[in-house]
Structures are given as C-alpha cells and as structure tokens.
Length: 233
Image: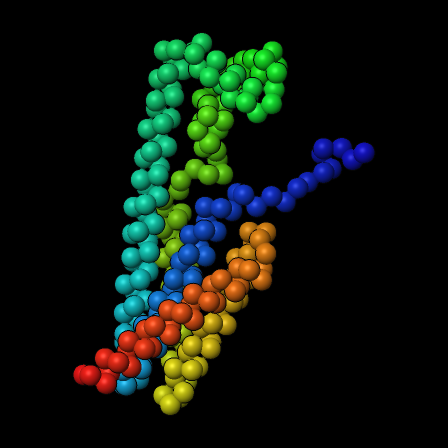
C-alpha cells in the first residue's frame, strides 16, 4: 500500500474562483464583441465604423465586467465577513451551544453520538472558528470570495476574448466580414469551452457545444436586428 506522503491527488476545486471569472470574461468578450461586429456589419456600416464599434465594445465591456465582478463578489465577501463576526461572537458567548451545534452536524453526516462529540471537541480545540465556518456555513479557503482577483480575471480575459474577433475585422475583406467573424468566433468559443472544461475536469464535448450554441444564437440575433435596422435607416 502506498503511503499518504507518496499519494497525490490533483483536485481542481481550488480553481473555482478564478476559473469561473476567467471563463465568463473570455466567453462574454468573444460573444458580445463578435455579435456587435456582426450586427453593425449587417447594417451595411463601413469597415472603419465596425472597427470603432468593436473597440468601444471591448473597452466598455472590460470595465463593465471588472466593475460587475468586483461589486457582486464584494457583496459575497461582506456576507462572509458578517457571518464570521457572528460566529466569533457566538463562540465567545455560548461555546457549549456551538459545540452542540457542531456535534449535531457530524451526527447528521453519519457519526455516532460519542464520536461526533469527540470530533467536535477536537476540532474546536484546534480551530473553533475554522470548524464552524467550514462545516456549518460551507465557507473554506477554496470558496472564499476574492473580489479583486475576480475583477482582474474577468476584465483581462474579456479583453483577450474581445480582441480575437477584432483581429478578424482587421485582416478580413469587407465582402466576407460577417461569415469570417462568425466562423472564427465560434471556433474561438469552442476552443474556450474545451480549455475551460479541461482546466475544471469537466466533459469537453458538452462544454464546447454549450458555449458554441449560445454564441451562434447571439450572433444570429444581432445580425438579424442589424440587417433590419440597416434596411429601415
């Protein structure tokens, strides 16, 4: 039997925070910018106007992603800190009750009464607050909110994702702009889905199909709207 020291497991749960923000940012960057480009191009706009619209979408989108992630994850962080303060106060005022509470949690997980009590006592003696945050509230080092990390990851990956369809605008002939941007962007989305799934240990095929479908739908809708408005205006 191999010893625990020689046995290593490659878990991916520690990637949840930044991976979610990064995949969301890159996906949004590709979909929103490609859809904007396709919609404006379908309205028979000039190549320079299309490029300006795409560049403006990149900057505005990156800032929006950063601000949105920071505000939403900060709200989560505020809630976590409030719960931590409450648990700290309760541990100081009613330690016996908190020990009983932890014991009940372990009993519900399958331990018998005596063992559940022993585990609660041992864990509280080692790190009472950490035990309650983890086992009562489900908050651990892997799930703790990190607003700055989430904001930076989203803004950076959004910018990278948005730059990809913009690059196609620069090199594609105006007569084939819409199909080339659409096909290339769907390819980028498929690659993103595969990379994100691989990094998270999920099924590659399902993730790839999911992001490609929604990207194609978004571009089809904006192309239709752009064509309709271009005809009217």
